[in-house]
Image (tube, rainbow, N blue to C red):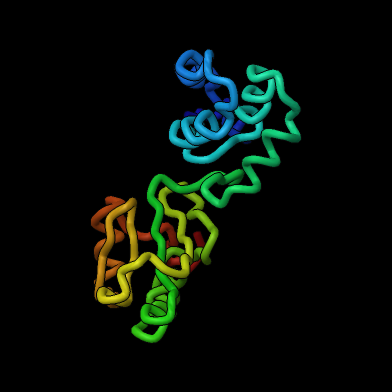
Length: 175
């Protein structure tokens, strides 16, 4: 995980959390992808310090680690929120209302697809099919599919799940 570094700047990364991962894969050649997956499970993204550590521990070039991490869409190099909302924008979901869902989330939380709220609680992503067309418009919140969503219903579920109000200040309209 990460912790503030004391000067209010970028949080420091606790690299010791990777030790059990290296122990698990120590005798397995070609374990870069599973190590990256475990690292992302730990940190919720792949911080640069972790990528450097992986390169050092595996004895491979940092460029190779970055190459693999950027090739696969499952890996994230930017910090993500504690909660991930995926809005399906496949044909059925788009026609049934995903644009209105997205507009409601953008207005309430002040973030667009691919962005994270300043408090680090929510990341919003647009995906192009989750295989739940009969539930259109469908969303996925932290791995749980929610179908037949309407803007008010989605915002209510987000607030309940995240545990508070939006990240925007109602007085100023700012985050």
